Each structure stands twice: as C-alpha cells, then as structure tokens.
Image (cartoon, rainbow, N blue to C red; front, side, top):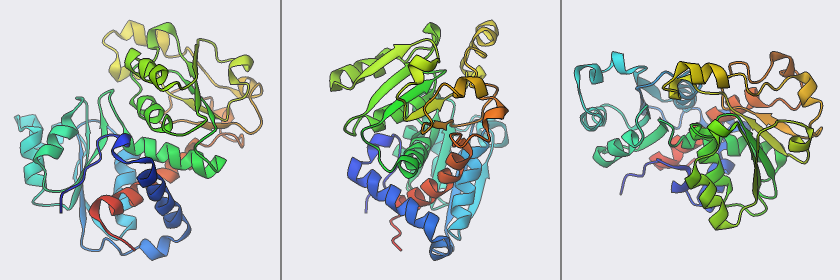
Length: 307
C-alpha cells in the first residue's frame, strides 16, 4: 500500500477534507473511544524551527490516541547541526517511528523528506510556504462555529505576504461555494501575486484594503488576525515599522458584527489586545483546542486506522 503524505491542504479533496473534519468532531465528542487506537505506535516530531502549539498539539494528539512521541525541537538539537541532510534524517527516523511531522524554515524541505520516507510525513510548516495542519485546524474551527465552510465572508488581516497560514487557508476555502475574502494589510505585506492571480482566475471575489475599520469589518463572518513575523524580515527596521500596524482592541471590536468570530493561528504579540480575550467573539484559544482534534484525525487518516 502506497504511503500517503500531507504537504498541502489541497492534497485532500473536498470530500476527504469533510470526512477528516467529521472524524475530528467525533473524536471531540467521544474521546474515550479513541484513547487506545494507537497503542504501540510512535510519532516523530522533527522541528527544525521553534514551535509551541504545533509541536505540542501533535504530541498531545498522539498521546491522546495512546501512542508515544520521539523527536527534536530545534535544528541545534539534531544531527542537522552536524550537516546531516533532511533526506538522511527521515530515512533514519523511518526506522524508529510510524509517522512523522516536520517543521522546517526552508520551503519544500518536508516534500524532500516525503520522497525518501517509508512512513507518512506531515508538513508542519515550511518557511512562508504552507501550513496544512493549521489550515485543517482553522477549517474545523470555522465549521464548528458557523456550521458550514461555504457562503462565508472571511477577513484576513496583518502579514499576508509571509503568512503561510493565510496562503493555505485561502487555497483550501477557495474550493467552497459562496466564499469571498477581504484582504487587510499594509502595502508592504500584501498577499503574493500568485495567490491574487489564483483568486482572480477562479472568479472568487476579494477586496484589498489597508484599514481595519467598521467599513472593512461590516459583513464579515470571520476575522483572521495574524502577527507580523519578525523571523521573516531581513531588515529589523522594517519589522519594527510594521509590527504595530494593526491592533484589535475592545473599541475596534465594538465596530464589528456581533456574530463575527475572531481567529488567530497564534502566537500573538500585540495585534490582539488581551482585553479582547473575554469577548464571546474571541475564538482563538478554542481554535488551539480544535488543533488537537484535527491532528488526531489526520494521524488516524494517514496511518489508515479506522475506529
């Protein structure tokens, strides 16, 4: 049986995605039913870049399924520090684990690993390229909150140039009917042209604006905030100039629809004020919990385990 990997959210068809999200919802409702389905199985978390939520949620997901975890949390703590290639690392890890999740600063590194791996490899984020498991988390959150993934107006705010979560989410939601986007960013952090061209080619409505104001937020079902990522900037002066461009506080949120949901892939810096956390529209911590269920469902799907 061919080994299946996840490099992009588009690796799953809409039907497969819906099936995976259904499984995640069933896991949420029936945790005990799934608590031993991965007894004796191991996931390797190969993180060449710092991570809290993604790495720990993969580890929590596997342990919730009864499995175990091995791996490393930084390039310096792996043989990559000695010059070992990604291809060689995954060949070795394939001898020790049943499935692997890889985070890497270089675009395409998890793909290289998948081509040499005898176990499923999950792209846990590669540079500014893709972050498919965050997208599955986002889609599970949106569907659970709104009851649907189609006929939604989604606002994406902040770093749309380097934000791999934004790129992946746009690509995935674009396959659903009735989707439209409001792209909110400063000129320097606009969405890449290839994403813009793809939306235009598919006839998907989108607008690009600079201000996060009442006119922009009016009619939004979801506002997806992102941080300006210091690690993606070559010039620290540019980062300092852009990092406080958008701050969602209580006064600004008061301009938004009462049923709008605020999401954020986290970590946040100061783009969402802590005073917003207690607002019922603030859903980013629930989103982090949904990430565990989404990754549990993904592990079972890629390993071919049915309950």
